[in-house]
Amino acid sequence: MLVAATTSPAVGSFHLSRSPSSRGMPRVTMAVRSNVVSVGSILTKLQQDCATPLPVIRHVADAMTVDMRAGLAVDGGSDLKMILSYVDSLPSGNEKGLFYALDLGGTNLRALRVQLGGKEERVIATEFEQLSIPQELMFGTSEELFDFIASTLAGFAEKEGEKFHLPRGRQREIGFTFSFPVKQTSIDSGILMKWTKGFSVSGTAGRDVVACLNEAMERQGLDMRVSALVNDTVGTLAGARYWDDDVMVAVILGTGTNACYVERTDSIPKLQGSKSSSGRTIINTEWGAFSNGIPLTVFDRDMDAASINPGEQIFEKTISGMYLGEIARRALLTMAEEGSLFGMSVPKKLSTPFALRTPDICAMQLDISDDLQAVGSILHNVAGVESSLSARRTVLGVCDAIVKRGGRLAGAGIVGILQKMEEDSKGVIFNKRTVVAMDGGLYEHYPQYRRYLQDAVNELLGLEISKNIVIEHSKDGSGIGAALLAATNSKYDHDF
Ligand code: ADP
Ligand code: MG
Image (cartoon, rainbow, N blue to C red):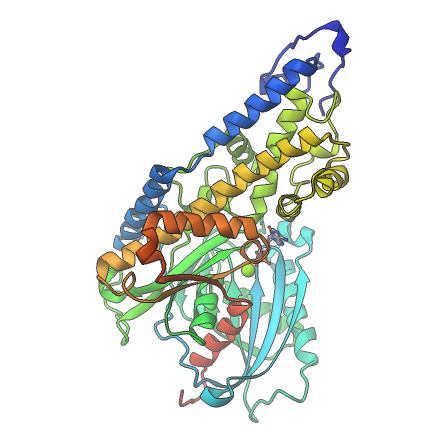
């Protein structure tokens, strides 16, 4: 930890070193006047480096389209894996019966059950439970993680009340939402390619995650069956489509980010042989791995270098909830170290990776008071500093630059997907109502981020077309969606 040696402002204005390589060495900080200049110049540089004017987001949207095509042509053809979901038919509304869903996100584990009543009754009853994933399990063994999932499910299943009915002799079926890159091998099996979002669990990569869950359920003595393995985006698309036939794309903006969409099978060169009867299938883009033309700052590069997956998931690292707060913290730490943003010493708390969370920067941006009191108290809690009004304004400038880039790039990504679909089926996307279903804690809770996202979409598509594109929150769609896909892929006879 750097401890800045302080000089009295009266002594004069000088500065021994600004280079990051001098970290850890005692140094003399600057006097007030040059501090202001320094903090201001760091902010200006940050704003320039992460600026997303129209040509930049246009490039990102176009590059997204190009990368999608390359990933559809051949496996490994692009940063975007364009994974086949094996979901060829979406829920119709006729689904009936009791189904479970399990959702392993980047932060939370959710279990859900739903009693479906068909077209007339729709969702008769639903119940869910949510737990945060204990930190140590993110770095433990595969068995430990899946035992935790299975025991959570067992505890939840035990509490099944009278509103839920399973016909005699049937096993309870689960839609398993697994929000990490999986190479799907069928609707109910898939190999984990790699962990993301800070997870580093040993012994899962290269294994079928459904087999991992089945083994853990056996260890628990739990008699349930996974009938659909779904990505969270695919679950969201299915859940939203259940209510609205115009849903064509789903995007998750939570701890991490991803998107999926309805693709024509004749637009998927790498799909040989097994064409679906509907002529459509859902493609999971795994767009978090996209990287082409993203404006990056020194703080992004440093955060990436310190991450467990350097050089990977660059789009995810610039737009998703796990990272926005951390990029801001790194910028503020540099401002504190090099420009004495919070006075002459550098607050220790501010040096702790991930101490500033995205919900914190969201709460700060919501502060519209004259003296930015909420900003001050969050900075106090998170960084242990007393801040001047001008420091608070600077902090908001940092947050805004990072959130603006995140929201606008996410919007550009959405346009990239829509324009790819439109190119292949003229008029089908842009000339009619098309819905993009959104979910995830970041999208749900961050109004400023949502506004920036929508602005970018409007700028890129123009007023006429963007009127047809409805970007809307699909609350908890992914849980119900996974249960619906479990129903569609049930091993028992059904007439829906
Ligand atoms: P998961 O990614 O585990 O599926 P969520 O979709 O609920 O979980 O997303 C959780 C993430 O959403 C958090 O990591 C955080 O980055 C972001 N988030 C949660 N609440 C807020 C908030 N109030 N403001 C901004 N971001 C938030
Ligand atoms: Mg999730």
